[in-house]
Length: 402
Image (cartoon, rainbow, N blue to C red; front, top):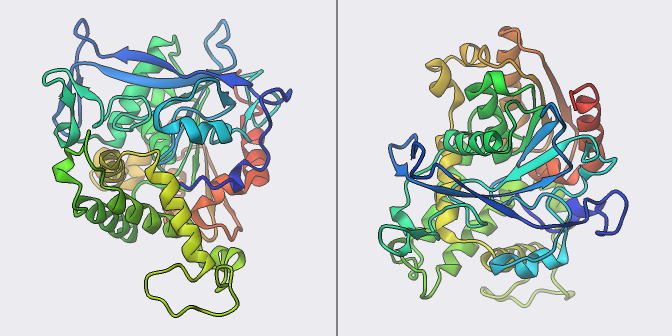
């Protein structure tokens, strides 16, 4: 997921009547010693988990109006409004922009905070407030680094459902997510069919494509082979910035499309009429854009978390997990009313992959609707095509309990 401003074009300032206003992240400690520890799908065990989250709106008396919004790969719990006290690597970033889906969440918006109790939770393994590789291992007093256990999409769903339970939510009105967040939304529908009333899956499917696996592998390779990576134990010393920057630049390409890149940048030179014939400098607008994205990203994200997040996405294969390879058998677990949305130029989660899931759901008799939206914005379209997505979600949620 990229955050370069396009997807925030319809956002409002904190004093606007359709803004949730000033927000402050909250934290909850889960799976403490007095309860069962968190046993991860990889076999690892965490005896306590700190989960960062934000909420907008209020839970009604019947606890029937909760909407869980799941963030994408490098997102966080700050989905809407303006952070009143940003800290750490997000300080500069959050002072400039509202939450990553501010255009969608707020009073009178598609996910109406006057009607719904909206929750967004930072995933396990991230570097944005929830327990992850940069957190302190209580047994050593040092950052976990790569000793942090491998996490999965199933683990993310488990932690988020536990947090919902602690908030008094037994059943969510809807779970909504795009890209990695769409994987979480699907997994929650499969793992907790009795606790999910509806789901919206944007630019995501039941697995990552082989090409997606390849791009993630190259990104991790760049990080691991950075001279400063030090087997993941780089906290307090030089950071593997070059490797993380390369991984981000590569990922950024997968979020776009040829048509979108051509429209936005083409082959235009950067600030000059003719090339400098240099091998090391920035010549093209496209290069400048990728460089800017990388520079911004390395200031706010942890390289180890990038390894964990991309690996979890790679491992997710819903049919293998829930149906012994049979996607129709897998889909039969879903009880939620579901909407799946793909975008024509998305080649990270292409329309044909989304249609595989939808076809399986139809064969299984699941209540599902599907739309493929024409767009030149590639995978980022779920964030950039604000008007289309807003309209679809508003209609989908119209008849939901809340």
